[in-house]
Image (cartoon, rainbow, N blue to C red):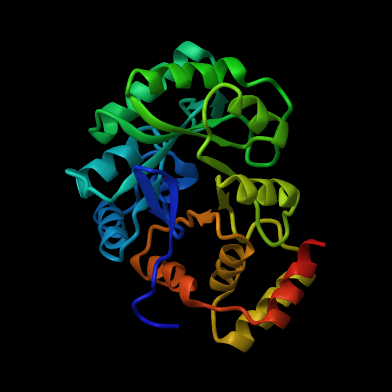
Length: 288
């Protein structure tokens, strides 16, 4: 792998093109994405290094901290480079102990958008994802009213584009009847392949599919398969898992998170890791 990775891009819309390898900022807050960072200077350094390395896709939310991560992004990067696109999420709040509380009332969703704007120092958000489900799975509840509330803010110019997080195929269809959807952000990795059909659908429809938790849910046997491929290619487990995702679909985007500059460099280097056919076949079998 080269020391200067070539970051492929993906166009979400005419005015938003992102690097497929993005950066997920959740880990910049304290443990459990709650409270201040352990090392504030390091958190700021990671954000600046991500942009320096050419990443133009930062994933965040005001419920990381809460507000802590968005304020770090603003401190580190504002005024933002013209090609940097910040993707945020609404649909949850935090209690005083860091617990996650779903918050999908349309009025509160609008309030959350305004809070993201304030803490990021922006007048318009490039992309706002409606977070509808927990990371562990999706529901089939209607999201038309909630997505409609965000669509109203899009019409007002406070949001450029809309996306979804933690959704089913049926919810994507429902949302598309309300307003265009430029990205779906769901749990998907080598071991968690329930979204295979949705990945294929997003590819066919030109929708960015943003996968999170690239190493989540691996059994010991599955881990050994990943270890064997990583050892053979002289790469880390994380790099192999990320490379497999990038090769899964040209519309796949990634948002691995870290609070370490060294780990950030390792993650970004995965874009130049080409998996041979036999390695892909072995990795594919993990989720079969």
